[in-house]
Image (cartoon, rainbow, N blue to C red; front, side, top):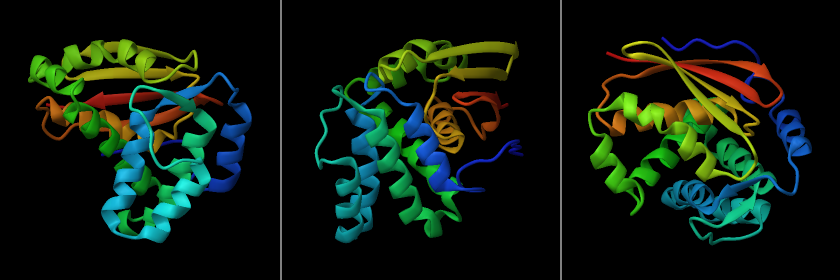
Length: 205
């Protein structure tokens, strides 16, 4: 069962949380275009052109090159807007954020870069998580850090520092990544450590 502490954007003050994170982002903080595209593709799938146009308006563009870096603040505005628009379909804001995170992970593993990794890591959740620090560094250019600590077989702690994404988004991405490599019913709970620091406990088996 998922367990949380602290307040997520879906629980209290989504707008205040968005502005807080944007205020902490610097011009050097960035996110790869593939993650922008993933959010927009979820919105396009709805067939609601007005919602797509609204998302494009808040992030400033309609097309993104997968491995080009774009401002973190733009990604935050985009993901928050999409989660608000999707909220009813996924129960609430946090549920929509988890869905966006899941889509980001599955899109990555379906890409030309991710498909070979999926094959290489199939049935190897430990190898997947051991590769997370390198993948995290490649996904953004914000000087953030990712550390993985193993407690025992089938359980690991992932700690992120200087991470701008809401915990629900990261939870969805981690669960989806484990599912892609063949893990059944992975579980995650998370907690806030600091303004841009969180940790995630993953378990399965």
